[in-house]
Length: 130
Image (cartoon, rainbow, N blue to C red; front, side):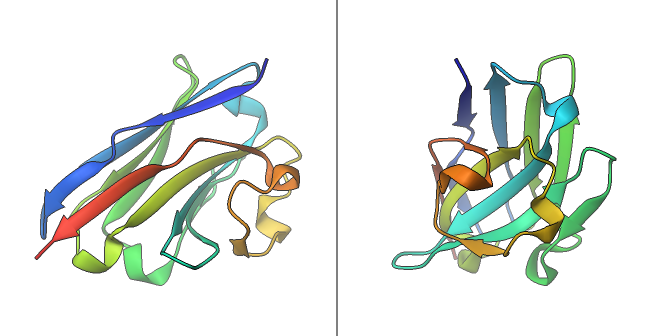
């Protein structure tokens, strides 16, 4: 059974840090593109960072230099380290594992947890106060 379980969300002050984790089972991240999305109320999921199976990373402009995506292959867990958090980072964050390795060609705004985009986590709330 495929599962993607997220953890690490919560509250932080502006300028603080949080690290989200995304543990996969039933598949391996070695053979997947990782996507980290966030959803503002009433919006679709917007891609903020990705890590392709070939190691190539991508960051949305507003998080460049502040967010870092990584993988622990031994633990089959993806991470999103978020530093220098801003109130506008407040959102529900989702990770996805695209085992079709098509993330680079997909829309960067998608319906959250859309099945054909990949395996999704349950989402975790991040709240940043000023």
